[in-house]
Image 1 (cartoon, rainbow, N blue to C red):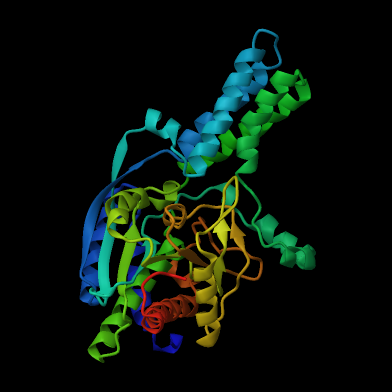
Image 2 (image 1 turned 180 degrees about the horizontal axis):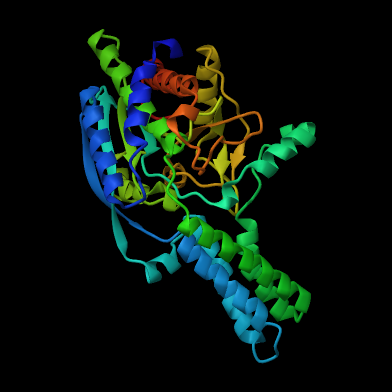
Length: 411
């Protein structure tokens, strides 16, 4: 599969049409984006529809509130009457943050928030009667900005320590200080270590400030994160349509899915899972998530973990993608792990073979990530085109593997 055959004009059309919409999770513009994407996928030969979904809002305000509990606990722990309360409050706040950012039961959100509407787009392409299904995922909402997303320190580290930086393939755990603040406040109170408790209070106060900044920051255009992947869905739909017209179909069923409310730390994907997972056999279904694929180097990450790292289910699928990439002269980087979260974690935890394609520059950064500079003119459309070509080649590989083995079970 050659990336040269991917129509860059189509990719630009998608990104430039949707970028002006202020696609905050659950907003009217996010709904407009979902409706447009469904219509555009249908025109590209993949009949699509918009599915109503819900999510539990929160993210910055909720986590900021939990961090504030940690700050108060750190102060209370300095007094004898307040120590016991500080231990309980700090420990519960730390546990609630871990639960929330790690896509756990999200007890705090369920108590503090009501379900909010969002919208998922689902389209079908390829061979609808094939036994194997490849689900290609993206998301169409956009994130708020904030000072914590500034990349100056990361780029400075790359310039000053290039050798060390190159060997580090796991991202910095940015959520650890957020969890650590309330945890240290509780520990300091329990051990009667004043300095430890004050350190926890200080870390928690910093987290409160950071989350407050995110809460009041504008929603970015989100060209790279994640209109780049939405454009890839449309580009892939057109290639699959043209292949079917030539009598050269991919031989698998392809679901093209764009979820809403991903930027609140996974929203619409949970509704998709509730609706679709019972219909998707784990033995004959693969998930490929595309997220922020408009930077210079295409990367297949091994896993993700805001607090505890977890590799995606079925490494053999990621190995298959790598083999196909190099065979088709569409090289990808392997071995890297993310400390942010993506929608890929949901099918992975459900036991589906899962992979996630992202993109970096030489500083191992996603340029303009969650910054107001994440606009269409800063995208690398060649990388998006490579992702489209690679996804089509992976679909064909899955079909070819099934034909050779004569079975549908993955090996």
